[in-house]
Amino acid sequence: MKTDYSKKIALRGLLIALAFVLSWVEMQIPYFFPIPGIKLGLTNLVVLIALYRLSAFDAFALNMVRILLVSFTFGNMAALMYSMAGGMLSFIAMFVLKKYTNFSLRFVSVAGGIFHNMGQILVAMLVLKSIHVLWYLPFLWIGGILAGIVIGLLGEFTVKRIRFK
Image (cartoon, one colour):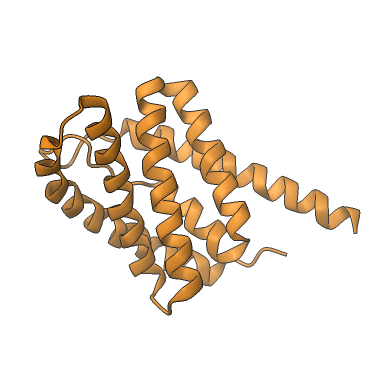
């Protein structure tokens, strides 16, 4: 009994470390898109794996810890606000779609990318006290859809092959 608990704690720690490293790796990748703010979202792969192979609580906790660690290590308070809003909305969308629909993991990933962008735009609207940043949302959605497809494909491939015991 105690060994199962220890294994679960170790697995959570490994997934947080993997998400942290993937965040750093993503920061080293030059922008592919001419539009600032569009990223691949490699850490969302780890959140999807936790959501599909562990539990919603594990995926949520992993996502929040990762956002805090990355923001405090590589970012600032602004990065924390944008990441937290995007991460929360993204997680909620992915959780609801996974739990209450039969959509594929790829679709859930795309929704996560889109809702992440919506969270960031909401924070930008609050910070700038303007709705004029909404013009940027369609461009971010294109990036979110493309990134969601790539991460979704990687997620489908990985989730089929990983079994946590």
